Length: 134
Image (tube, rainbow, N blue to C red):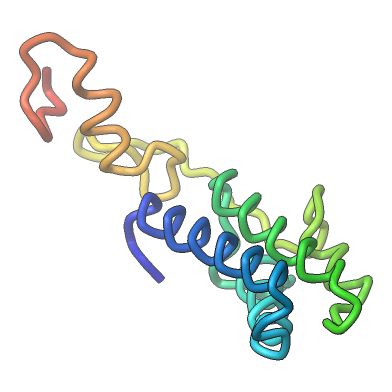
């Protein structure tokens, strides 16, 4: 998996687009079925290592599975659709780390390094990148 949440967001968004276009053309249905089941296993299963709190990743992945399930020739079970639907009951929950070490946010913080550094950080006048003392 990509370490940068933005990369994963774009990859899942692209996958959703490709699946939607392919379904509209009734192409690659077997591959879409297998990929949709893989998405459920990777993001939404109770033993997922890649469950995420990133709403864009979750929604693209969820919509991909739900969109594929609407195709009559694709066999995605109700339990798989339910797993990929809010409130994502099977998905493991993260334990939030409130501890801040050496002026940097915790590893499990929703403010990942690039967002915190470039997006939030640029709001501080005269702050350079990675300047957590400013």
